[in-house]
Image 1 (tube, rainbow, N blue to C red):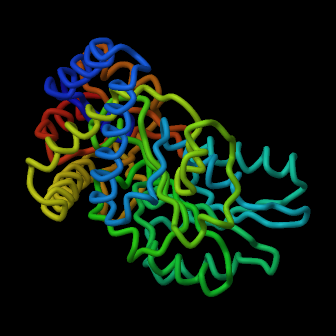
Image 2: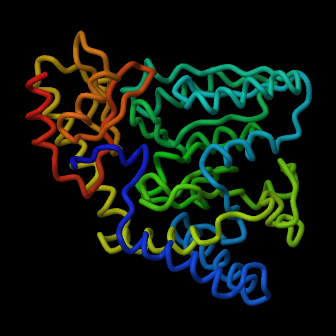
Length: 357
């Protein structure tokens, strides 16, 4: 197997699978919902928040445990006390799931939303991006949502400076971090964002069904609970958590993060990702039948490209079925997206196959 889809779903290490199996057995051994099992569950949650807070450089009490990035984005966007006439600003590179949330918010509360043009400036310097954002903020803009790394272009946004713009204007800033956690070295305290939603099953190579949401402590009192359950009634910082989750996943995610950390520190891993993505980008650029989506060298692990006069979806199916090469097609733009990790060693093999198409 030749794997280029860490941005879709990572690969579970055997020790992660072993941890999953052990934890399911442990709950049964302790008897589900016994006092011993409940104590074990509380310890698992605390340990996991601690690991995630270390990963993001924040207080563990600012971490809400979720099932995935989309759930975290929903919590963030629905937590604002929207009033009719308010405005939500998005980039035109946001995931369709985010756009759908905005559409429902507009229908429910009578707000408006619009997009600042990012896709056509995907190769622009940070200063240009900041100018575009500033030009698209309106007097009624109450919240902005952006991706730290755009899921379709791999562009890395200057998040700290965007946060400074939002703070100066009293705008809440929510971030889709599906493609950044496990890639970028992060310090959310320094970045100054209000919400940062991520998942464990992509670049962290953890199990499906577990993610997290950072909520800036400065927003904790103002933000409204999206939905309510017994788990969020215990303490104020748990107000966005609802009820039971798959607790065996918690230790499995911690094991996955532990294994990732064995590959070196966060800066070294990030540099390795960029180096390998850049290697792929340069080699794709040499192929006559390939058009790269971005003309600047990568700053993340995502490299999107088109094969001239061929369907991206059909090519992704062909690569998987005939060559056991796994990458995905994306709808906007219609392209193939390779997700390159610091573990990726099959770049030359991918290039050799693409040359034949």
